[in-house]
Image 1 (cartoon, rainbow, N blue to C red):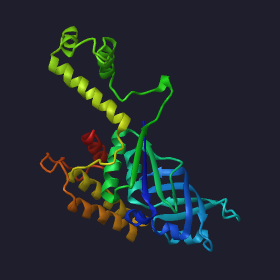
Image 2 (tube, rainbow, N blue to C red; image 1 turned 30 degrees about the horizontal axis):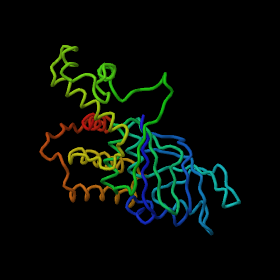
Image 3 (cartoon, rainbow, N blue to C red; image 1 turned 90 degrees about the horizontal axis):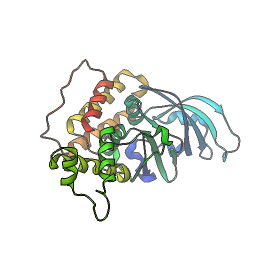
Image 4 (cartoon, helix red, strand yellow; image 1 turned 180 degrees about the vertical axis):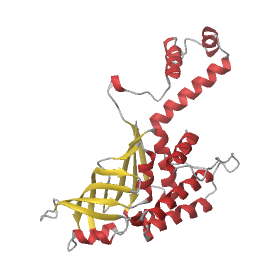
Length: 290
């Protein structure tokens, strides 16, 4: 399980379509989901309004639809509890991944927007790639969530764990090494090149888990096109998504796909089926970038 934090400065909020929010609210904090399915994402927020503004003014924001005021505070410093429908391409895609979630700590204030997601590394990479096309965050950080030992899930497969422990127990990672890779291969009855390849892959996985900030995740043009088509389908089929802001963000992604020289142009394109559900298409993209 990974956690990734994205941050955009206040002067760049227009790039992700939420700059108008600060005209109404000086601070919004995400507290929890009320409902979270594709095309209908409802969240509980604590909202601190700008002086002279009311909760009704929030309905002028394309990306929010006020559904219920749970508690309205007379003291502006305390903030009001409000349930809103979120209307934005990124949370919509996030809901479709079925495994990544926004968490408490996500917020919007005069400094900028902080968006914290938790989920599997593969699915977070998919969302990071989309964010990069929409508007690259000013800061990104990632960490592995520490679970209790009995529930801990390693980033390595069972076979990789066994090989890594075998090499470790025999001193391959000691300084100086107590055993050479040729000797490891002989003890395991495998080719030296095979052991070398597996250990290199294991080391790469562990280094990525420790240090990857997911700041430069890139999708192939075909992957990006499929995601845009999924977003457009959601917009066409959902009346609440038919806003200038939602459409503008999709167009921004399209423009960035065209402007950016992306790797993978010579790769075999994914086979597409017009009848395939967006969820299945996204799963195949996730498998493709893993």
